[in-house]
Image 1 (tube, rainbow, N blue to C red):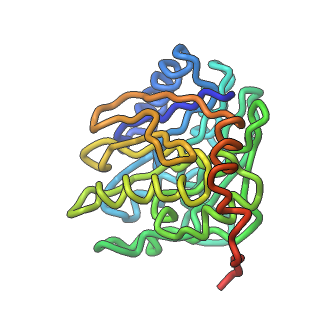
Image 2 (cartoon, rainbow, N blue to C red):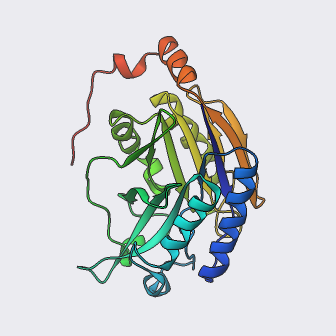
Image 3 (cartoon, rainbow, N blue to C red):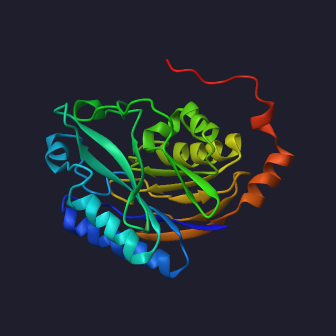
Length: 265
């Protein structure tokens, strides 16, 4: 069993303030028993709309913000996953990156967003470079394997399926799900769909208003919402177990019965 928490807040343009908020939320979740805490996309720095301010905010993975993230994980003895703006040595653009910070003060896994948000009037590719299609980044906690993807990736079911094929039991999904017509409905529907079709847990951490639609949640392999937040800043917690995954897969062996694989485009 692993206790998982989603941490919901609205990061701004002050990285020190974002770090402090994140530390307080991780501390709150840890005090309630969480072993893995998932924070939103762009936890380091958010400045809508997508423009050069995001580029100016970027740091390497050995920079101060990720260093602070590692300190938070070590301080509270938990894994922390959060979104950062990462500099790239060979590009003027930056990477929309997830970092999994481990309790021993090291980086457990890194994921660079595959599908950039060039939709609904936004053009993330103006300042970000899409991540390479590598083997899915995973890490293990107490016998469960965790995979990661980011926000707009949710609209591409093959991303999650590749993560499940890599052995993930739990999908961690940081997001800045921009509010708009039917967007909250899309969010809740797609998060539950990824859990149901892959028979895995999904822990989805969104930004709160005004930059995000909120509704962070943890969903079990049958699509049951175990814990959720509305629009408020805070944390929500639930447990994930290998036994529940096995039970659901015995009832609904969809992964074993499928007849199609995934290939790169």
